[in-house]
Image (cartoon, rainbow, N blue to C red; front, side, top):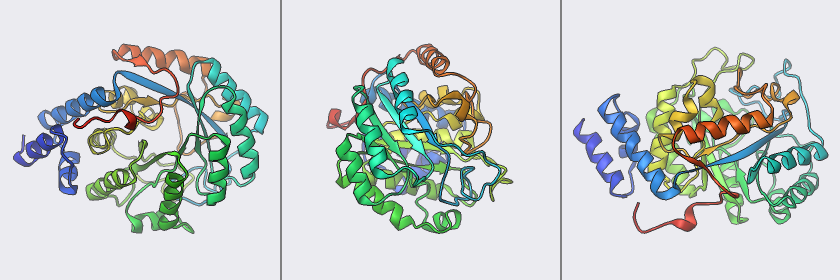
Length: 353
């Protein structure tokens, strides 16, 4: 093991704040001894701060319309090959009710940036779902502050707004017509309004460096996030980046492990994207710092059309199938399913990790 790697690892194990160079060093872990020690530490920190529970958050992908033109996303407005759909409010509520019946303590309402759904319309959906006794996470992109305020007043608990990359130049290159500063402003509004805030980034974007990924993790620490969504880049053929290579699965594991050390009290999902690139991707992420899985409870007939990236796993399964499959996965790892909504871990902070 390299001396500089050992120094950064000891620093993390002692619960000391990692600097940018420490994070870069850890992300560059060599296979074998270095990677093994790194992953064992991340899993130990996860066990200490989050316990053995794996929380399941049922995701409802209620619209694949999007006003944006992000170069990596299959939902981009320019993709004329995509069959578009929208769920009616009553269908979103019915899917959430099914999720509650399956025992999920949280539903995630996710869509492209689709302004067909007005703020009052989504507020009514949130109020109806809250009557089911479950938590609501929103993932609907950039909106005016007053929209976020209305949804928070209606009962929304969390909001996931990934910053995608902390490299402002790279962000501008991949998001035509969008502003990194506006994205950051939205994240600040969400914090001011009392949401449990989630953000996150894509791993393996063309032109991205380990230093960029370290900056992503430092931004998550600065934002003091309750959740961090960290997934690999998967090229979609009908986008400008369709010919680029996919992000590294191994590097994604390292980012997840580093996130557990940099933002230890954040919920970290084992993403479906990892499960798409590697058959045991989610299991390995759970063994390297992750503690959340987001099963799909979108009505089955719409799932294949929610194509942020192609070949997503589980698109032909029903919600019950996903529930039983994931429970078996969790138990096979010696872990147990979380109960209740699985709110922020920050209330359980102690003086040291």
